[in-house]
Each structure stands twice: as C-alpha cells, then as structure tokens.
Amino acid sequence: MYSAAMSGTDTARKLIETTQELLWERGYVGTSPRAIQQRAGVGQGSMYHHFGGKPDLARAAVRKSAEEMRAAADADLSREGMARERVRAYLSRERAVLRGCRVGGLAQDPDVIADPGLRAPLRETFDWLRGRLTEVLEEGRAAGEFGPGFDPAATAATIVAVVQGGYVLARSADDPGPFHQAADGLLRLLDASVTSGRGAS
Amino acid sequence: MYSAAMSGTDTARKLIETTQELLWERGYVGTSPRAIQQRAGVGQGSMYHHFGGKPDLARAAVRKSAEEMRAAADADLSREGMARERVRAYLSRERAVLRGCRVGGLAQDPDVIADPGLRAPLRETFDWLRGRLTEVLEEGRAAGEFGPGFDPAATAATIVAVVQGGYVLARSADDPGPFHQAADGLLRLLDASVTSGRGAS
DNA sequence: GTCTATAGTATGATAGAC
DNA sequence: GTCTATCATACTATAGAC
Image (cartoon, rainbow over the protein chains, first blue to last red):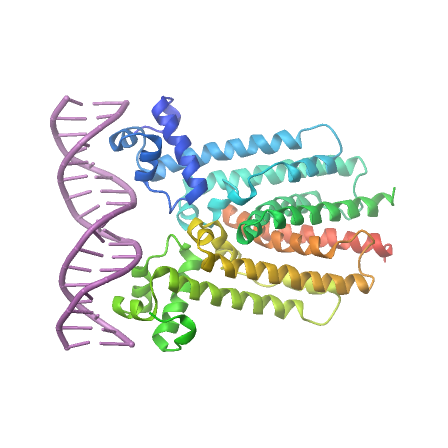
C-alpha cells in the first residue's frame, strides 16, 4: 500500500488512468475495483499492492483529473485579448458535453462529498477556477470593458455555474443544445454589461 | 406488478416517498431495494408486489419529484410583479443547497440517462422550466424591462443552468456560498441588461 | 397483500503462492 | 510485483407459504 505519488510505475499509472475513465463514466459509487482491474488488464493483487483500496485509488484519479481540467481552463483564460473574448473562448471550447464534467459530476456522489480526500480536489478546482476568472474579469474592468455595477467575483461564480449546470441540462435532454444555449445567454448578458458601461459601439 | 398510477395504497405511497428520499440522498446507482424496504418498513415481497423492481419504483419516484419541483418553481414564477422580480424570487427561494437538486442531481447517473423512462422526467422538467422562464422574460421584454439584444430563451437556459451549476459548486465547497454568489452574479447581469435597455434609473 | 427463504451474482478486501 | 484462491457481505430478484 503506497500512495500514488510514490509510485510512478506503468501499472500504477494505468490503474489511475482507467479509474479516471470509469469515474467519469460511472461515478464513484458506480465504479467497482473489479471493473477497474478488468479494464486496466491488471490483477487484483496488483491493484491492492499499489493502492490501499478503492478510495485511495479514486483520490489519485480525481486529483489527476482536477489538474488536467485546471490546465485546460487556464489555456483558454490565459490567451491574449479582451476579458470578454477569453471568457467566450472558455465557454465555447469544444467539450464532450453529454459526458458531463469529469470533476463536477462527482459532486453529486454522496461518498465523494463524505470523504474529505475525495472532495478536496473538487473544492480546489472550483476555487481556483472562480479565482482565475475573477482575475480575468478584473483585468477587463480595469480596461473599461464592463459597467460600473460589475462584480468580477460574482460574475466568475456565475460563469462556472453556467458550465456545470449546462452539463446537467444537456445530459437531461440527451442533447448538447441546452448547454450551448445557456452559454450563449450568458455571453449576451455580458455583452449587455459591456454596452451598459461604455455605451453601444 | 402494478404501475404506480394504478396503486394508491399506503404501502405503495410509502415506498415511493422513501425512494424519493433515497434517490435524493444517494442517487440511483447508490440506492438499493433493500435500503428502500428497510427505511419504508416494508417487506421485500410487498415491494415486488407493487412494483416490478428497482427501475419501476424509481420511475414513479422520479416522476413525483419532478412534479413537485415544477409546482415549486411555478409558485415563484407566477407571482405578481416585474419579470426581473419573479426571476429574483425564483433564484432566491430558500433551498437545501447542499442537498443538491432532487431532479438535476440524477442527470449525472449513467443508469438514469440510459433508461428512457427514468430520463424522461428530467428532460420534461427542464424543458418546462426553460419554457416557463422564457414566457416570464418575454412578458418582461414586452413591458420594456430589457434591452434590444435581449434573448428570452437563451437567458432562460442560463438561469436554469446557474441554479443547477450552483448546486455543484456548493456541494464541492461544502458551503452554500458559491450557489448564492452565482445567483447574485446572474441577477447583477440582468440588472445591467435592464440598465442597458432603459438607461440608469 | 405481506412475509420469509432462497438463489445467483457482484462487491471490496485479504491470504498466500509464485 | 503479480497472480489466483478465498471470504463475508450486499445486491436484485424469485418462490412459495401464509
């Protein structure tokens, strides 16, 4: 029983990647050690050699998914250009909408929320994302992009919520449409906020 | 094996209500017939007399939760007053934020999405909610509440997404704060849209 | 309508050979 | 490090007595 950080072997990596996939597809409650082992092509003893059990392996997998999600978001948000354009890039990025969010989708799982080590990557990811969006929006406000009543932190929370909620609507409808409609509605409101601050261009 | 609609007995009702609770707390994958029977104080044979199995009982429970959610939303959205105030009432309604949405929370569950009879109430609920919000916003636009570029349908999708995504953020943080911050950010953007349409009051 | 008994499979983990 | 038993429990459902 070693922590994931200590073990860089191919087997451990394969187990983590497979667990990332299964957590995305089936959630934590719906993912069994057996399913992980079979898809990874790894024996039972091997898994329990590298990890202490399902929670330990899941913690490593969720941490990795959270890191990858932050990196992907930062790529959009650290572009050149106006804040509004960077937010648009983030909202319009190609996504497997019907698969939902690898990280946010786990928030509904009671066993994830109950385990501090499993929930921590979720909290950290969304804290970071709201913080990064707040920075971008503050830059935009400083550049005169937004009106006087504009609140960067609250708007950042709204943006993240629209993405996470968009996944819920799309999966419920089995159609990516509502996700993109919700994002479009948000961008239009941001445009109106621009207009309100600077007058129609 | 009777459908829920045909059976109004106390036992069937008790089973449905208990299933509603457990689906909310544990999701579909995480809810076992055994747990339902024990919490409902009902024997195994009794459950299988009234329902064909876990999926059949869950379908009845999800339909009922969806109906209740629509009724609660309609109460806020059918008030007197300006569209913006009705939307504010809907967003500000007291909610058990950390428990998540009884209906939307199921959208992450793969077995719910895979079963048309289980997914249908989700789709119908969010279709109805976006439609109802669109009506409210159209009334507001007709009354001059919003600016020229305002899109009622897209904004309706945004509002629903903010609520569903707000639950995700709040549960991830184990704190209702991000839900309310996201809702606040949305209301501020709507205010700016008002301002942009009519000029600052 | 309700109950207990039973069944076959899956879960999550451990033991110990190799 | 990896493998194959093995284990106690839980899952979902059926059978059949009452």
